[in-house]
Length: 398
Image (cartoon, rainbow, N blue to C red; front, side, top):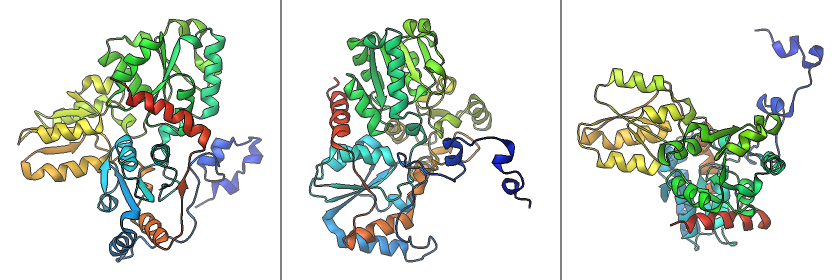
């Protein structure tokens, strides 16, 4: 096969590759991002038949010194070693409730480990088994971009009317920005309460970084119109918006999305209804607005789990969320004659979440058992101060 890169080098085309292009091509790394980072040391082979026993032995040796958190979207091979499972915020709070655990091993992604570090004590050390386990949505809003957005809002004369609300799925830097500017954090479960609080403080909301959760909450749950929402694109001058659009808008949505939930389409919904008569379509609010409108039920991960627990035997469900969780739920409720399928025909794992595999977990636990601290996630004190302030505002919501 001809090596296209060699045959047509970039310089021959007189094109200078951007830093992002180099990053995506694997030819560069971003030191401020979890992408492109490799773990030090040697990982055990994924085909090692003793991996399960090695993980069990290392965890047993560590005893109460280690507390393993497993996000709902993790692989089963990892979940089996989790002391607790849940969504990102629940897990961070669970970690804070275990001050005796010296090591918090977060089987999730980077922003989740940051939140755990913010909420735990200074004596606890939060560890991410693979530093490359990031979140594409969180990466879509950088501190520099959001600071520039605030400058745009200031120049438009609306910044004083704007209250930032940031989704939990955001970096510590974005949470800190939110705290500094009088805003709050939200989860997919309490987004409506967070927005209602924000509109009591100001006339407009800057919603970061997931446009779909912001739009769905505002329009579906709070009765606003699509015209009340504008989309701020950080890659365009002034976000691609006019001063008039910023002044007229109630919701200024950041142009970000979840790579998993953004895949679902109305065609997916129509197809599954045609294939499975009587099916209930249940989707996460990170899905596109038209998908949410076409679904029967919409809710957070915890809502999805509780809905299936309460569902009658013999009922049929198509779930629009991450595939690891859907498969786990399908297996769990099969004995109750509940048919549970993935909404899309195309397999869609969270690729960055799936970087946390059994070899990485074994390497992490064995390293800690040997007294070697690896892959610690540590938020600097200044960022932690304001990020915690935003989180505390969320915890104080009625």
